[in-house]
Amino acid sequence: MTDIIAIVMTGLALTAFAGTYFQSKNRLQAISVIWLVTLIVATPIINSEWNRINNLLLDEEKSHYGFPKEWEDKQVMCIHFPDDYTSTEFNDGRHHISSSGETIFIDTFWNESGVCLGGFVEYSNGFDFLLNSTNILDEKLLVNYTESSFGPYVNSIGGFTPTGNSYWALYHNGAMSMVGIGDLELNSNSIILWQVDTW
Amino acid sequence: MPAYHVFEMSNLAGLLLNLFLLGVISWNLIMIEKRVNQGQKLIILSICAIFGIAGRILLSPIPNVQPVTVIVLLVGIRMGAKESIFLSTIIALFSNLILGHGIWTFYQAAAWSIVGCLGALFSEKLNSLNRLIFISILSAILFNWIVSISILHSVGFDLFLPYIIAGIPYDLLHVAGNITFMIWLSSPLSEIMSRGNISLGEVENEQISHY
Image 1 (cartoon, rainbow over the protein chains, first blue to last red):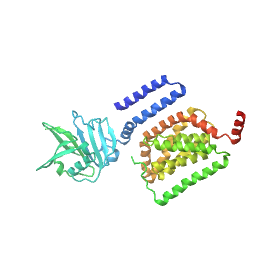
Image 2: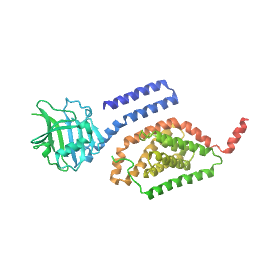
Image 3: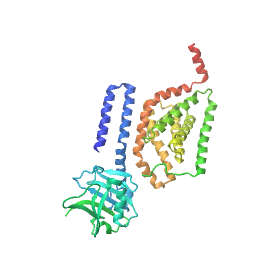
Image 4: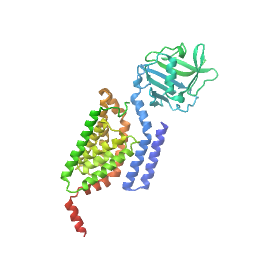
């Protein structure tokens, strides 16, 4: 949101300058170009915000509340980074990314910052879903894990490795998962959430 | 949001479309030729076409900002409906040789033609820059919505309204682009076009009076 304020302020400042520097017809020409360029620069932000307003599932009763409408009844993988971690890619809100890797919108008003990948239907195993969905964003959302006798254990996601008594906790449909990601059976509309908890 | 330009035509449909575009260009060219007693009008139309094609191709990295809508509108106002239909079809076809040709070419040509005809229809009333800017805003939205109809070839009607709503930021870009082009182009283009409307007799008399 601060970006768009900066862009509009720059536009206003240039308009004020052009308004005093140029006369009559030239003034109109200069100001029209300034506002056209301002709009072009602001379009990606306006477009993302417009998509958020239009596409956000606002019904709090629904399990997929806060996600794009097109993800309703589909599988979603969310990673919420802790407040004190500044992610290089995802610190300006929660990014909603489609199964083809396109950013649908960035929700800067959401409480947590992070990534949600959604719109999947085909996964039945949690670990396949985690690796394949995060793979869409390549190294931006790299998952490091170690194999143990209980199945795979997730060490770090997206460059964040919890230390001390904190760990990447796995939630399935809003409740803490009783089994590890390797043994997790998915529904056709499962929501997987990774967030850093402490024990 | 569904992607633009996803409808693939069969060879026959593509051929029919090309023939249709060619027909529109030739027919209007003949109709203009009949009523022109000297070549100047065609030269001006060619300049407008080259400018429109080049402008559209060169500005294609910026979505929806291009001078074609304003050029076609001004041609409709200053020269007439037939001229604007001719120009719309030429520009849509030739710029899409670079930008990608398909069923949308028809909708773009049709939409620009409608914009030009609208200009021709209200040419008497469009006598100040404010009114020209107003109609250029209307034309931007009209053009985008008409071209949006082309997605009905690939998606159902229930997705049409969400598609239109999702495209509103891009409509705004077209509106802003049109306002800018109208402010910059209205007087030079109107001046060139009004020169094209002088008949051969008038030009000769003018030249004689200079001697």
